[in-house]
Length: 177
Image (cartoon, rainbow, N blue to C red):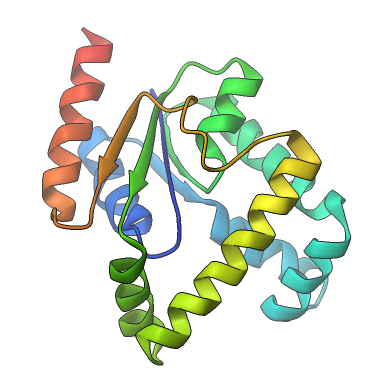
């Protein structure tokens, strides 16, 4: 089984994916870890590598190819912004989940995790999301606001990770039945 978990920063994708994988008895791979490994392969700090990615589409394409390759092997919870789109485009059978969340709540979560103020974090999130939207549209013709690729869209604004996981597990069981 392949399950993809996607969402914007602070929506809870990491928490959900990390907790979901052992419940399904499968691996977890997050795109952020792969991106950090790619930066290390080049000997670059993450901010430098992210800036380079904005100028060089090969970085995103390499990242996405690595993620799709892992999804083809099966038995994984794949977590990345484009995971649902990647498996759809590659024709990989998967349960594709998008976790939505109120922008303010996401900023508060990221600020609590990384430090800083929620107001500053909210603007940083907006800038990052605008950059990603441009890149994904330019590279793949994918509009991140289009959730058509997802089987399940959940909102984490007022729900716990466990509530989301329960709903994903139910959808996974139904899919396997």
